[in-house]
Length: 202
Ligand code: GAR
Image (cartoon, rainbow, N blue to C red; front, side, top):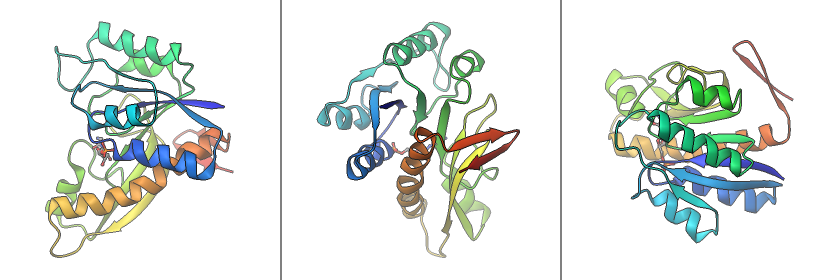
């Protein structure tokens, strides 16, 4: 069994897509733990419903990062649960150096744009406001920058003239739910390697 840990702050539709894909494909992948920084996150409910271990580790001190003690707790819980790959699924905090050092090339993220375009928050809104015709989503390794690590998979989504931010985000999420579980599977199967900025898939 390849054990993954999932960090989620919100609705958890990506978490659900990962759960469903593992079941449908009968993959030897176990979600060892789901951690949220937000006690209200529906992601925690989804984990409970599926009988997946879950915990809320809040961080009152900051909004966009974890303070040192909280960061240590996250690392401990992930290690206690033998997590081999940390998957950020709508986790709305930036992980710092110490966290990343503990899981070298073992943290991935799903981002709602075609990186390197529109890093940061609410990227679908940025794409819509900019007027690009296509956007999409990206699964990438997490490094010390913001949404800047080596790219594993991307999917393209057209932007239509009458799109609202909500409609566009929904269209992007449909693709997220396909490429994120797939990227996890490829890594679990040992088919992904990184050379410099480039990711090779066998
Ligand atoms: C997803 O669209 C994900 O790409 C985005 O948050 C949403 C979480 O949805 N992540 C970021 O913007 C990270 N910067 P979910 O809770 O339904 O999976």
